Length: 503
Ligand SMILES: C[S@@+](CC[C@H](N)C(=O)[O-])C[C@H]1O[C@@H](n2cnc3c(N)ncnc32)[C@H](O)[C@@H]1O
Image (cartoon, rainbow, N blue to C red; front, side, top):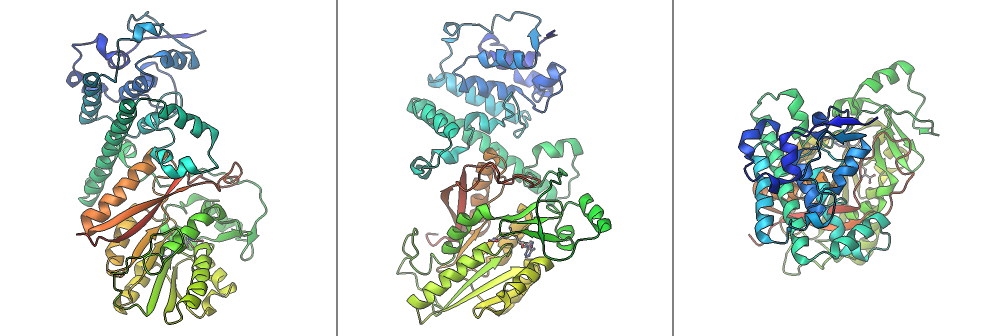
């Protein structure tokens, strides 16, 4: 039997604003984040707010047929037959977003919702989508040329792109306008959170989760130990220690991580005792691109613009590159291959490869694989927080620095910027990192892309360009046996950060 439900005023209005010309948001501020699920007293993992409804309605050309499906899916019927929920397409004909006035009212309404406290990162509606995903379900990255040219498009994505491209230019630009507004709201929330954190303002627990973007790269602790053949580095870890480790957040807490044991699963994965992936082989194309990036401002590298010949390296006899975080050594292997090739091409240059690594098990693996004996490699054993200071003291400057650690967060990267700003060669230095910031949701990933750019520019005057790479090495089995899928975006935004010589 279906359950009879009423609609709250704010949801009625969101479903048909034109039927409520006298509706005043300011009189409903307490209900801005009220969800349909609360309204209908149903248990749900989604939180469909008025903003979700308004945006969904925009995407569906002003119709609410999706809402009927939503009710059906939850086995609900409305107690009243609302006249503002017409059942034929014709009845919706009046709502035309391509009329600029109608769209202006819509976008101003969205803006007002946020001004009255709309939470920006809730997942809502049947598809469990964030507000941003309602606009661009696969993120804005799939609309770039690289994606259009790639052969390995997922059919769901290409079908969505075809539909999007069939829309009028005006409507397409409206999608971007809404998405940009949503991204801006996410960035503001992150900046606000950061400043509150810096000034040690206490958070009310239940709200902090909703507004904190800085926490979205924190792993969910899902204890999922599946059977799989594992090559351990050393003998079995005693059960007592294992039980203790299970309680600890190895992916989120650096100290716990460094004290825990790691396992190399063939040459496919490096995982913690909790089966968090520290590093996985599917990243190999990203690592190749990253290894090439480190040399790309110094010598011509395939796929990169030729370095500006007018830029003079004050110390061009020595080419230094630094990798922070060895993991499976994928990037370091590519760096070595590059050095081998470049040493032949440029016999007068000396190439030096520094590696900072903190985990004892990884260091042991490095020793086993001969990394300590390579002639142009310097291994710094310890955390970058301690080791980089030594390089700074020795006045060593770098052509390329790469950062890819584990159990660290965006705030650690902000700290890293303070250090490496004094280590990158001004003329032809480049800094890059594995960009997994917010990468378990396309909307968050797009926000972080802009936030990083802004942080680097505002604080250091650095320029951050992204090279887009279509991710085609993740398949259905990639995350089998791993606690958490940490990368769920079709396009990787590869950052290349340099000093801004135009300033
Ligand atoms: C994701 S893996 C690096 C993978 C590497 N890019 C590759 O191509 O295989 C992260 C590595 O960073 C190391 N690490 C984590 N925190 C660190 C820190 N504070 N300083 C130095 N290394 C750290 C981890 O032990 C791990 O080996």
